[in-house]
Image 1 (cartoon, rainbow, N blue to C red):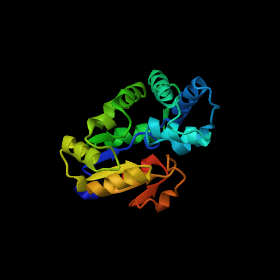
Image 2 (cartoon, helix red, strand yellow):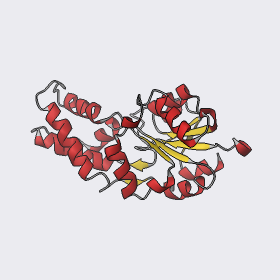
Image 3 (cartoon, rainbow, N blue to C red):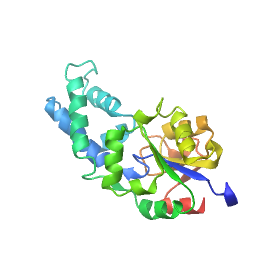
Image 4 (spheres, rainbow, N blue to C red):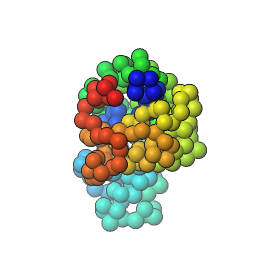
Length: 219
């Protein structure tokens, strides 16, 4: 790191760069409605988001005392995915100061997205919100041998950005991100207002917790 600044930045997507929960929530309730299951609140969706479509639907089914082995589950997975893909950026928006911060950080060092989201959702979302241009690499669930919390996505991002993990600052919002960063050897900070699954951000084990994206400019 030059002048104690990171040589690269690795960003989680959902709950870190972009508040994607509103579109995911609509897609989830669309799938539940199609299966004849009552809708859930956005607060619950925000609590479940971040572990993939199947994990979210499992949580929603369990919320209604239904097993994931229910005959409607696979149809619901397909319905949620199709609806979300068609409406990936209807309501989703970058968090405050994300765009201006990315513009300034990209002048200092290369940036990457490291997400467990599938590329069929990730790339259209980044394009629709005009964020793709800031990133030299985008690592999605289907681009890496293993998803977070395994270190492989961070390793792959660092390889593409031509830096060592210890030189790259990982910016996330959840225990999954912290575990990935730690396993890879990256310093890691956590956005306080992301998708923390009900866990106090201060207890996630990150090097720091930040409240506003422009704080990264002083890192």
